[in-house]
Structures are given as C-alpha cells and as structure tokens.
Image 1 (cartoon, helix red, strand yellow):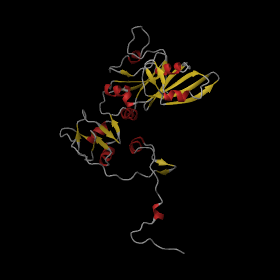
Image 2: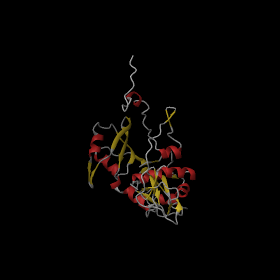
Image 3: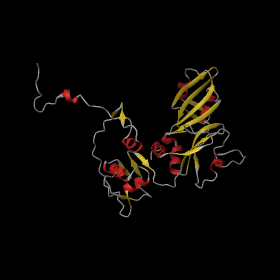
Amino acid sequence: MNSRKPRQGQRDNRSSRVNRGSGGGVSRYEADVLGIGTTKGGQPVAPPRERAPKAATRDVHVEEGTRLQKVLAQAGVGSRRHCENLIAEGRVEVDGQVVTELGTRIDPESAVIHVDGDRIQLDDTLVYLAFNKPTGVVSTMQDEEGRPCVGEYLEGRTERLFHVGRLDYDTEGLLLLTNDGNLANRLQHPRYGVEKVYLATIPGPVPRDLGKRMREGIELEDGPAAVDSFKVVDSQPGMALVEIVLHEGRNRIVRRMFEEVGHPVIALARPQVGPVKVGDLRPGKMRPLNKREVAGLYKAAGL
C-alpha cells in the first residue's frame, strides 16, 4: 500500500483537483440588488475570487458634495448599508475611478457613476419610455397631413420627449422615447452598432441561400446593406416569418432589402432595441423603462 506523503514544498495534486467550480452568468450586482442568480442546481453558487479593488489614481472627492452612499441609495441602487458595502468592495466607479472610501463626497449634478460596470442615472428629470407603435401611426410628434402620430400619445406630458429613430407608417413595434439627448444620439449612431430585432412576414418558401445573401450584403440604391443575423421562425404554405437583426437605421431598410431579393414584406414588427424588449406591451401603450434597461442602453451606447 502506498501511503507516501508529498515532500515538503511539493503540492498534492489530488486535493487541488476538487472544488474548482466556475462562477455563474449573473453579476454580483444583479444577485445582490435584483435577488437572482444566487443558487445553481439547488446549491449556492461559489463566490468569485477576492480581488483587491484598484486604488483611485485621482481624487474625485468634492468637499461640499453629497456622500456617495447617499447618492446611490437615492438613485435606487439599494439601502444605505448595501451601498456602503458596494463601495467598500470596490464595485463603484466615479468618473472612471474606483472609490472605496465611505467618506467620499461627490457632486451628483456632474458625477458619472457605475456600479459593477452599469451606469447609474442620477438625473431624475430624465425620462425613458418604451412605446409600442401601432401600424398606421407616423413616427413624428405632429403631422402636417393630419395622420395619427406619436405626439398624440404623449398629450398631457410636460416633458419635451423625442423618439429614438423611426418606424415607418406600416410597421409596428418598439419605439424608445426620451428627453436624454446624449443617449438618444448615441443609440442612433451607426458607430455604436446598437442592435435592432425585426420580425418580417414574407412570401414563402424561403430559399436556402437567402440568409447567406442577406448576411453578405444586398446592394441598395443608397449603398450596400447587410443583416447581422437571419433566422426563419415559422414557415407555412406560401408564407414565412423571419427574424433578422441589424444595427443600421436607414429609411425602410428592412422592406427595401427583402424587396430587392424578391420577397416583399407583408407585415413587419420590431420587438427589441438593444436590451429593451416590447414584451406584452399592447400596441398604442407605453411604459417607463426600469433601471436595468436604462443601464443596458447606456452600456450599448458606450456611456
């Protein structure tokens, strides 16, 4: 029987092979604040390895400012004690600097705060809405021809809201409304590649090579256009439902692409923009975005 013990300084590889589980796919911020992703297979998920927080390389303290934990709590991140723990663990950044001192004061009017990489919106005057635009509605605040328009659904609101991008008259689906001009401009800029999901009903059957052609690019009158992904969701005799994802926002681009390949769109809907989904929101209705959705839009826009 071999009962040899490892020599001094030699690692016992038998014990090093156990308990090497990897962390789950849910961030610690989500687990702490949203209460999700805390267990796996009925057992607690092993916490990630301890990492020493990076020390701030420049001072973000503002002597006459507000304590950081108070600002976070007022922004809805969590209780004051929870926010203090986030700071102490090095999970909070102010203007790009990790802050671990609980006595740090900041200017809420100008500071940019991230928790676990997610932007925290401090300006309570900013509004973010998801609107399910019906077909037969123009994506403008008013229409000279007297057609139904998005502005009619905002009557009674005091904020000066504007739509992020457009959906054509015959298309229904998610339209974001906000008074945050900086975010809106970024979301519409092709540089940031914010993805938009469309569901198109087209004449069938769908040729096997259609997805490949649309991913490689279709030549339109204003230049080539390509989808990021293409998937046939459903197929019936003479008709098919196709999901495409693209980050361009040119006028009627989806309809023009399908028309160019010989499958003119019968019906078109947009169920998602970036991380925001229309879900079960009925056409003509709107809802405020939650903090997680707003943070996701900021991340998608590189803010």
